[in-house]
Image (cartoon, rainbow, N blue to C red; front, side, top):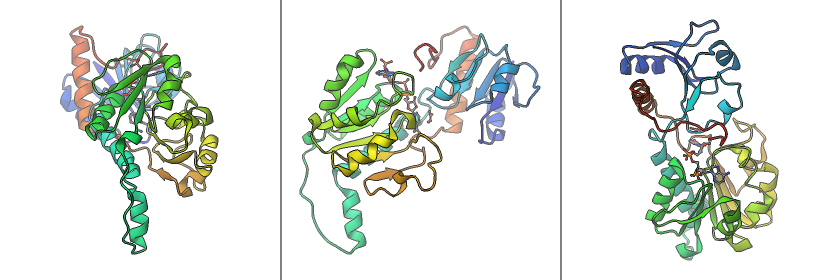
Length: 309
Ligand code: NAP
Ligand code: GLV
């Protein structure tokens, strides 16, 4: 069995060593132009040349949850894409979203600003029932985030393509359920995959529907930058329709110097790190799936290219 590794700007060395240790029977190498034919590739945003030169690849193991970059490429005819299935990302996402939510709800950003000025002042406690949290996407990450948010006793709404029944979550599904979901939610967390159906879903119209259409909605975007129509956000913040936004992902990454999001007082920017790929957990998961596939067993995380995730 031969495995090629191509990880954009990540160092392939530690991944190759880890895969060799987990699968001693396999030949594992960094991809280079002209590499000998392989069975599997472990990739992040690989060059089209790799896919063109390896028509016999069976599997592309994506070292992230989102496969939008891969689906934009011309894939080898037989190759299946297998995405990471949690592998330590879900708990990180839960931490990040709970942190952003609680920082906003408890007004810790305002306390930090006042403390910098040496001011000792209290804010009126807010009711968590006035801050229902809506989670777009109830997949591997969205469901884990919903559980974590419910733990802090916020009302939780969730939206997915297919109907769901999750304890403690008011579930909405499909285009028909979107408007009611948005109106019932005040803090909106985006955990959708980027597909033609979800591109631009965070826009003036949808964001204005939050909180029953009243001012005070809050956005946490942790999925992909292209879900947000960036030009719509600042007018909504400046008019007070939205109270703020925490953004981990952007249309162009790294976020360009001089982009207005960097300095806007109601926007918190983080550098696409809400849920990092953990190398050891990811290698263990990929090696486990390769062994299961060799035994002819089904594996989780196989992407449906028609659905786009
Ligand atoms: P997932 O397991 O594939 O879940 C996707 C969810 O979105 C599912 O509930 C799915 O509905 C729903 N969905 C998809 N298309 C929809 C549509 N058109 N309408 C309504 N619901 C739709 O994905 P995941 O593992 O939770 O990851 C979600 C995304 O997070 C990834 O695609 C990636 O872009 C992003 N991500 C970001 C970071 C970061 O560091 N910022 C890290 C990891 C992942 P069904 O359940 O009905 O199929
Ligand atoms: C990161 O953004 C991922 O999709 O895993």
